[in-house]
Length: 623
Image (cartoon, rainbow, N blue to C red; front, top):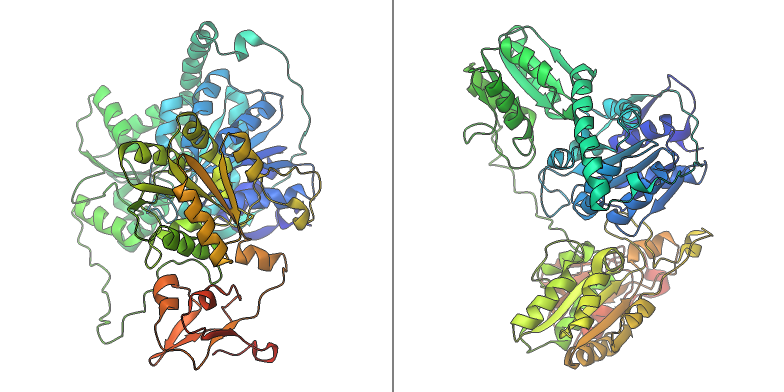
């Protein structure tokens, strides 16, 4: 039995934050869950996927976040408790649904998990999704710990049903990917089937209906405001005259800081866990008891702006500061030391920063930049593209996936990137406004997510570029989740369909389509060259399983290679491929047999044929 299904109230488990969120949903009786995977939220979805194999929970990896929220919205409006999970930028994709769903509302609870990523550990921006609550008018909950993340979820479902609208559950990477002890609660029995009652004058959002629904939404915001002033997740501690208003993981840094600095008796803290609407009455009472207030929040000055507005309306004139050049910035994550320094500066408290030990006598740690895995088929495809386009003036729009790492030397395959699916759309613009050759890159999962509309656009408007679809048979970057092109039978799952990328591309009207196996370099280079030379939209589909995914499926692995005495030290293998299986021993090129997967790409480009497969008896040795 999956650990998250443990039905022993009071049992304590050590859980990842994302597992705690999933457990909270299980305790709340979630019966329907949907997602498009995205770090730092991915483990919530993985937990649901695993649990769904052993329970009545329906779970799906949806085509994209917009679709994920649409299916969850339908389930919730059939009276079924539902959860929709995504990373912060995923909510941009789902925003079209979100804004109008806020008008329509829900019948069964619907919790939308959005995982923000301060410092951009795995993201293209660090947007603060609290503003989506303000924009949509929906309530936002924010946990400060792993345990609280679990405890808040049942409350979020209850709140959703009380207000009859979705609730946004906003986390950050530090909550998602921390581990902590969690006390298990009682599991509410899920109700997997519901019913939909037709009511077009409340559900079909033509203007006349939406005008009425907007009035309802605004009334709901006022209901939520009253609840935010009474919720146990907004609370005050301490009795000092110096105030700190904080949220999320920053609350822990503040508590640790004031304890370390021994100023507990001087500080009063307002922790905000129900952050939209902001608890106005609670804030006013808090401000009236403070001489000055510091707002400690990662990201944007969301709370700071609200607190200042509330103070102004109450004609309160105390100093309220958060984001300031000499205090907290809008950049990156906070840490305990930074928070202590800012508390010290703002309240003028003597504080000795932690002494950093002198490490000048210790050699620098070798840099390990992110790189494509040994034997990654994308490396072979990129090499083939480089050779096919040799001597041409090219632009390479790329997309979101592990293949994005191809922009690094030596492959240098990636010139422009905005968001999921943007490689195709931007290729249309580049092809129209420049005289360069355009070769764009997109993964299979990203193609299904948001690449198809751009390709339709390119066919209709007769743009001129080559799209290379990197089909590695899985959603590799976020942990090998399935996508519509995955063969689920290889994972021993029945009942799934499979969508052919080639048939989709052909159905869209693309006239020049090539399928390549990237480990066959000669044929791949030739096919890509033909595609680039074609006038109009051409598509190359590079099919080869992700090497890590293939290993998990126990696919037969090729024999590792070694560098023989024929090597004249040209180093084409290193300079043009950059495979991590290569290393230098003295002045000689070597291959780590434990990393080599036997893809043979290096052997195909070696001018002396010096790279050879190891004999079976030598497979475990380095060469």
